[in-house]
Length: 463
Image (cartoon, rainbow, N blue to C red):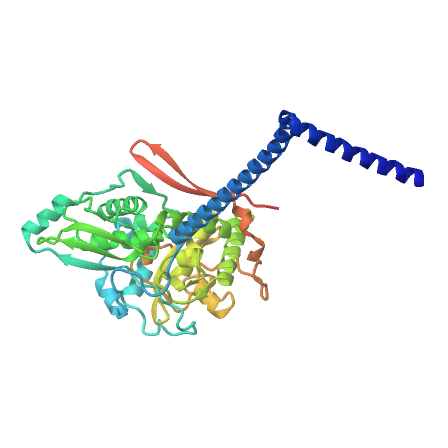
C-alpha cells in the first residue's frame, strides 16, 4: 500500500517539475505557449457561440408565442358573438294582434296551384276565421316568441331623389337560374313567378353578403318584397346572419326601388361565424347520420335539441345560430335548429309558424314514410315529454297555422312515437370528434336553363 502511495506522489511531483520547466521555457521563448493559447481560445469561442444560439432560439420562441397569442386573440375577436341586448337596426313591433296578421294577409302573391287546391282550405279558413275556442287547451305558457319579419319602409316622394336612387343601386346578384327542391324548400314553390324571382335574387345576395340591391322585377310592390323575404327565411335557417328586420324604399308610384338586408350586428366576421355554424351543426347531427330510419333520426335530433337548449330571450333568438352554436333561444330557434339538422340527415322538415296558444309560435312539420307530422320541440322541452311529437293536425291542439304556413302539407297521425316510459336517446354519445371530417357540399346540376342546388352533408363517424 505504501509503495502505491509513493508512486502516486512521485507522479504528481514529476508533473509539477514538467510544468515548471515548460513555464521557464515559455519565458525564454514565448512562441512555445501559442498552441496552448489557441486551444483555450477555441474552447471559449465554442462556449460563446453556444450561448448566442440558445439566446436566439429563446427569443424566436418568445416571438412566435407572442405572435400566436395575438393571432388567437384576433381569431377570438373575429368569432366573438354578442348576445347582450338587442343588436338589430330597427325595433320589433311586439304589439301586433292576431287580427293585425289576418288583415295584412294578401294571397295575391301565392302560386295559383296552391291557392286553388282544396287540400289547404281547412287551414286557410282556420287562419282567417278561427273558431272561438281555438286558443283553449292545456299548453305551456310563455313558451312562444316567434317574431314576423318586420320592415322599415321609406316613401321617396321626390321624383329626382327617387331617380338618383335608381341610378346608384344595381341588382347585385340576380339569382337567375337557381332552383330549389320542393321537398326541402316548399315556401319557394308557394310563390307566384314574380316573387320566385325576388326570392332567388335575395338568396343569391344574402349568400354573397350584399346588403343593398334593386329589385330584379319592374314595378315591384312592397307585398311582393315582404312575401319573398318571409319565404326565404322560412326555407333557409342556414342564413342565420340575416336579421328578420329589413329596409326598403319605394317611389312616388309605389314601386320598390331599393331593398336592404339587415345582417345581425353581433357577428364581427360572418365568414368565420358560418364556418363555426356549419361545423357545429355537423357535429350535432353526426350521431343521427347513420341511423337506419328517418324516425330514428328524428327522435335522436328531437331529444338532443330538448337536452341541449334552454328557453331564454336574447338578441339572436330568432336566428338558428342561437340554437345550433349557442344553447339559449326561443321557439323560433328551436324550430330552425330542428329544421336544419334534419335537413343535414336528409329528412324533409319544415319551419311552420302560426298561433300557439295565445301568441305567435313556431314548430315543425316532418316527413316520414307514413306521411307528414307536427313536431314541437319547444313545448316538449317545456313539458319534459313527447306530448307534441308526431301529431296530426287535429291532435296538435292549440296550434293554428298562419300566412304561408297554411300551404304546408296536411299532417296525419303516426305510429312512430316513443314507447311509454322510454328515456331520451343519449345524444351525448356523439362527441365532437364524430364529425371532425364532416363537410357540406353543394352539387350543381346544369340542365339547360335550370340549375338545381342540392345540399349534401357528410360526416365521418367514429366507432
